[in-house]
Length: 150
Ligand SMILES: NC(=O)c1ccc[n+]([C@@H]2O[C@H](COP(=O)([O-])OP(=O)(O)OC[C@H]3O[C@@H](n4cnc5c(N)ncnc54)[C@H](OP(=O)(O)O)[C@@H]3O)[C@@H](O)[C@H]2O)c1
Image (cartoon, rainbow, N blue to C red; front, side, top):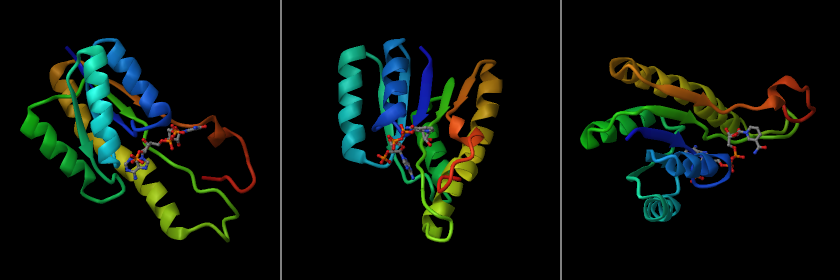
């Protein structure tokens, strides 16, 4: 059985990815912040699809997020076959009005964390001679849109 690590699974697009990967018979590693939701999602997916579901409740903008994830993977002795970099959010508004702290968190989540996680997981995939990575983006990146340059 293969294992999919998916970030941002407690709602939206990531939740659908989790559903689809479980439906195709893969074990799951769910990563988001809300532990209650993750716990419920774990129970729900395990009972409906009979796959092993583990979760990591983690704020992914924190600097040591990737280390925390790897500590768990190593404790569980799990390796990752599919990586879905999905967790993300949007800070809209005029650049002069938007919240700097939120913008830095967005850069941390969308760029730094994704780069660090992918860099750490790829050698694992190379060693196993198998791996697939999905980076969720937005067609919005290609459309100039006032007050939504994020
Ligand atoms: N929806 C759209 O129209 C659209 C369009 C283009 C691109 N996208 C991109 O697609 C991806 C998913 O979008 P969505 O609309 O499905 O988002 P969403 O419904 O807001 O869900 C975001 C998910 O990411 C998790 N998350 C957010 N910030 C996090 C953090 N700092 N640390 C850990 N987990 C975090 C949230 O879980 P917790 O709150 O439990 O942490 C949640 O599960 C995002 O990257 C988004 O930028 C979406």
